[in-house]
Length: 111
Image 1 (cartoon, helix red, strand yellow):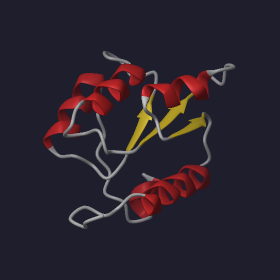
Image 2: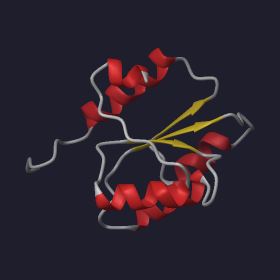
Image 3: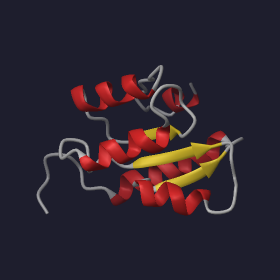
Image 4: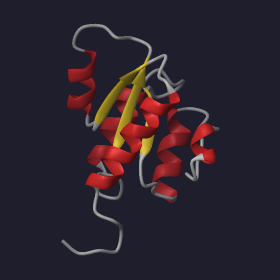
């Protein structure tokens, strides 16, 4: 909800299948991926998004309650552009979203 207050348009998915369907139907500027979502987990959703030419360029921020050794490296290997552990402060997530969106070329521009 706090992201909406910051001016972001937010869409939520109920599970991994829903996340994939939504990303393919209406590609977002960025995905905040809970790695422990039901159905297809966030790891597999991210790998699937990155293999698909239609969704490959969508940045993914992984959010996980498991800060085990190697979790960030595993998330990056799956295709995540950033990794945050829960609980994640709203300001931390907001800063990461802004950082990633600044790095990404805007749609419709040529490089």
